Amino acid sequence: MAVLEPCDNCGRQTAIYRLAAVILDGGMARVCPLCASSEKGRIEVPFAPRSDQGAIQPSTSRDVW
Image (tube, rainbow, N blue to C red; front, top):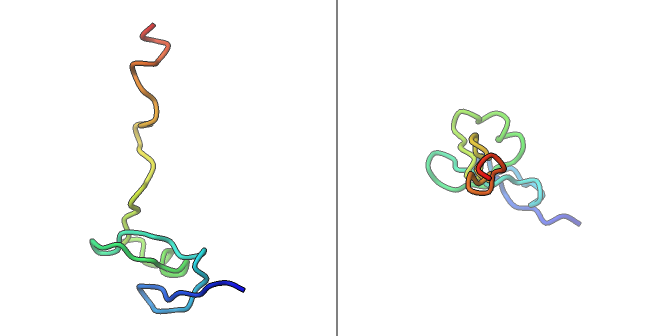
């Protein structure tokens, strides 16, 4: 049996593992998949992957050796 929690945007009861933690209008919110797909303009993902490949460290690159 799934644990249900309300979506912080629409209030729809959703299984907790389906809720996404996002920044919605400047505050952290848990939103259901339907709101996540329809409210893309208001959502900022707090831990988005970096576009500059932040895990690659220049000091350990083979080009430097």
